Amino acid sequence: MSGRSARWVALGIALVAILLLAGLALTAPEHLAVPVMDRAYAGPLDLFPFGADARGRPLLEYAQQGTRVIALPALVAGLMVMAFGVAGGLLACVASGTANTLIQALGEVVGALPRMLVVLVVALVLPKDARGLMPLALVWAVLAAPGAMDEAASVAQRLGGARFVEALRAHGYSGSRIFGWHVVALNLRPVVVRQGAEVMMQVVFLEIALSYLAVAEEQPSFTHADSLVSWADLLNLGYPALVLDVPTLHALVLGLCLIGTIAVLALSLGVAARAR
Amino acid sequence: MVRLVAALALPLLVPAIITALIWALPGDPASIICPPESCGGTAVLAARWNLDAGPMAFFWGWLSGAIHGDFGNSWRLQQGVPVAELLQTAVPNSLVLIALALVPLSLGSALAANGWLPRKADPVLQVVGLVPALVLSLVAAAGVELTYGAASFAGQASWVRLLAGALVLGLADGALSGAITGTRAVFLTENQQRYVGIAVLRGERRLTNTLPNVASALAGQLRARVLHLLSGAVVVEAVLRIDGIGDLLWGGTLLQDFGVVLAAASGFAMLSSLLLVTQALVEIAVAWHVRRAPAVGRLERA
Image (tube, rainbow over all chains, first blue to last red; front, side, top):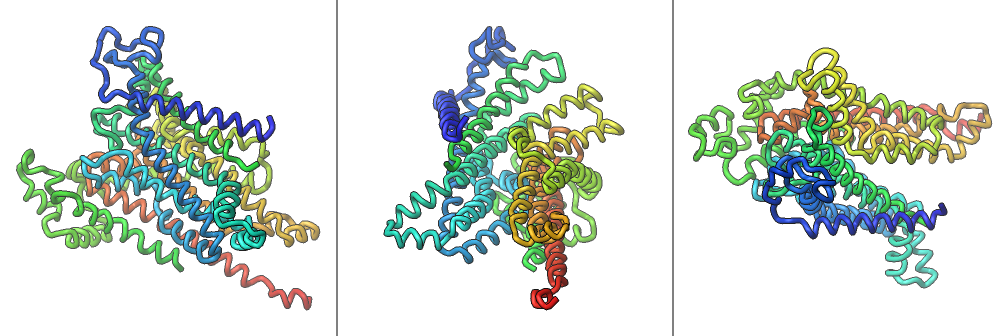
């Protein structure tokens, strides 16, 4: 497959994944359905499309609510990192030396500690009524930003930095065309989109990890209200099927498929944004 | 120099910030731990945990104790148990876990540096790297529980848990693929320098010429990778029930056990400081090595 067709295929896959996730998030019910014990552990063939949990509630609702929990914070974190990346690249085009030093210093400070430590400390001190994925996603995005800025700045410097801009100015190009089209759209796009997609995926994985660890200890999650469930609940429901004789493998498979969808989305966005 | 200063500051800054944040929460810390409406002895508890004299007194009290190896007692996780006791078990376990996880990463980096890993393998590694640590940890935990039982935490089972955890850490979240592609990129860029071509023509090895010049970059990458592993260790230790510092941090956070969180976070800060010091030492060694090299004028005269 040529590079051009690979990019179009990747874009198509990304769009399908985005539509699927948007559909799930937008149709999420406020609360899980009333338990119907007759349908307990129903498989996908008995209760279309994904089966039911131990209380006969449809797993589709788990998927919908879980998507609603992650959708907006992951999107905002991804966009935030993209904005930081663009800023880093543009700074390298207007003030190469100073900007690069500043970005590197920022990276040193922000990246000095393991990200999970910072996220957990923030989760610890969040008041109970302010708990949610959004603040943690924003913290994660801030921690990821220096890396994105550094990589974007390297791309801009390889391009020639300020000299590249001067050369285009000498050709009579306008500022918006130079920075908006030539620098950002043509040259920074691959790295910035990939970084944004990766952070989006990392925020989703962070939510699943934090929620799973809390749910497994029968504690409230840091990332969503107690009335909601997340994809981690699917993994928690499905895990016993691996070690005990509990018929919840369909929950595990659904949870893994949803995680896979996010991974495929991030990967395909990165491929779709690759340079020509 | 900046790194050394940061390395010295981190173990002080992290507990200071956590202390400040504890007091920034609505309500005083003792009431958070023991709400007066549901728990009778809030004032006694505040006095016992040194919470009644304000954040400065608490911080200096905690710090002076910590310097002498006394991190106070656990507030909730294992109520009353000295945190130092918990750390005595947790820190070595986490260090072993990280050291074992570094084995595949170092191996992959060494192979990539020598150009012995085909680029065709990159897509496979990247796909494996997309799998989150939680999923791989669950698979590993299921394997351990099926083989040794759910309550197996001693002897061979504990080592299997550590090895499985290390493998998960080494593979998940792009750790191995990042190490390979990162190292390869550094060497590929350096190999394009003129001096490398000249050295090869003189019959010298490429790696011995490039290594001193890329050592700083590799040290930076190594620090980033260990920090990444430390981050992932929280999830891996909690799922595989490895008695490590990440598990301690998670348990403390979940139960709002500030005593445990302060100590565990300071442990992470100490490890981060050690990494900063290591990177600074590598950079100093490289600078010293470069200064020892003959000056250009001397080379030309020769």
